[in-house]
Length: 373
Image 1 (cartoon, helix red, strand yellow):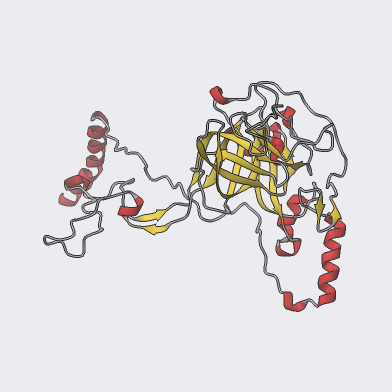
Image 2: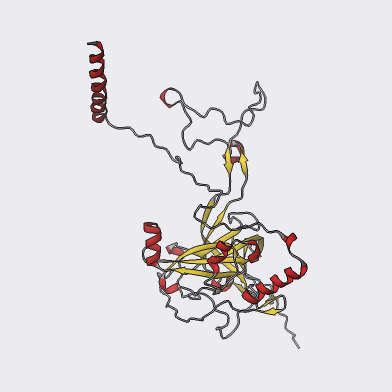
């Protein structure tokens, strides 16, 4: 009888427990910064392997010269300037197509990939000093265009159904240092492998042919852009540097706890560390966006863009992505170079320095002296 009673009780208790819990209000513990990983320090598993091992000891000087000339015969100079090592610039475009759309207020153009090269001061006409961040656009080319129907089939609802993807690469590299799978991404455009690639969402009328070079003159002074980049990687840091904690007192009985964070858990049923608690950990190397940054100067010779302000995320020589801002109050009011700037089709070449109307041009005279006879 005892064993039978225990068996029936074991079957009855779970049913009673489910009935009681269903009648009570459910309490869900929530908190900001939950278990969501915001930092990814390794590439995705779906990406092809980029770099490969190179064994230079197996090549002689004659082999190296042969490979160098073979690469040049296939790709030609890949710099965005008109000359490269004394050799004329050759466009990588195989078949030039001039099917271009017309710009309208809802058109979305492609962006650019650059490197942050430092901070530089400029002066307004009123005499006010302004700090600017220099972004150099190096060797940008269009790699591939993915139409909207293919984007929806492969990526689903994460992207707008009316917009396509444009793959852009920067800084051409030596094909010997990259794998065959990675070099296959650039077969359609006829370009050498790029050190950095990025995709931009564009409208169908803003499509560009694979192999089209992109310059800093893609933008105009006075435009506003959104900046995307990774912050400086600080490594593993304590709570004082990572979160700005004050720390424990220096004296009065404090022993080996001067820079510690103190209590991090609760008591009773919540005796654990909650997700999102400010504790020591990895600092920096996070993807950040800075919207509505004004372009106040462009150097067309070296493809350098001057952005107003020194607070662009990332360290010196880090990659930065630029694109037209999505802020309605700072959107484009007039037609830009659409879909991009073509230097060979412009009637007059652009000057070396393009400046905003608020900046002072030091090449222009400020004092005029007249001879009175």
